[in-house]
Image (cartoon, rainbow, N blue to C red; front, side, top):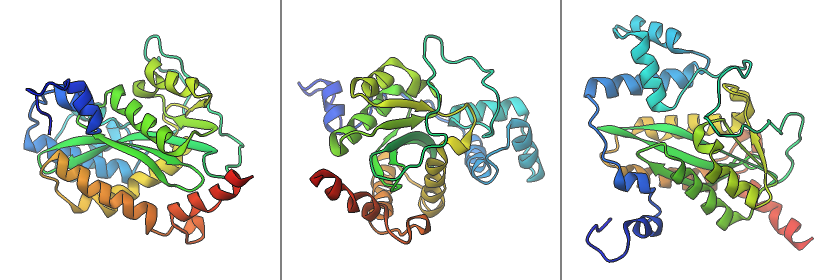
Length: 275
């Protein structure tokens, strides 16, 4: 899709096609098939046992006959962007120069669309390789407001996803993320602050602080990703896009009294806008 000989700059072509610039300039190194298989298994184990760290995951893999060292597991977890999810003191050092914002949602009742949005990134396995999926989610309705795929976890594609959500749906009162460097950088927090949006960040490793996004990942992976073996990034983008359309418009949620995210999101917006 990108024409490197065209007069239009590559940056502009990527923006028009809604493709992260990193996916254009970055040339990925091939990952051995055996390592990809371990990463896929780690992804499933992480969803099943989100509290498991590298030591426990190594033990779970060993019980399945996979011989791998703990350091190797830690390296793969870092590459996949996963860590053990449990509450612990903030003893780790943040990205140098990046401000960590407090968690603002404790004790708050979320009662309407666009009150709180959340964003996260997850690892998506393919037949030969992997990509990363970022989504912006409305907490009240569980509706996916914007999403992007990228072959790197760079901040640019997160900012593009955020800007897409803001352009399509206005702005929330509070925006919640984890403490990943993609979300603590000046480009991302500046886009939020510039729109007058209160910034909230999870306690490090505290999965309950962003539980609705974690539930979305389970749905996406068990109902879509694990049933497929995408041959290319474009195939993954098309197939995941179809699933997210289904998730928003047709998939009922018990937590929404059987409504779909679209129904829960749009039902009260006209009333609020008219008021």
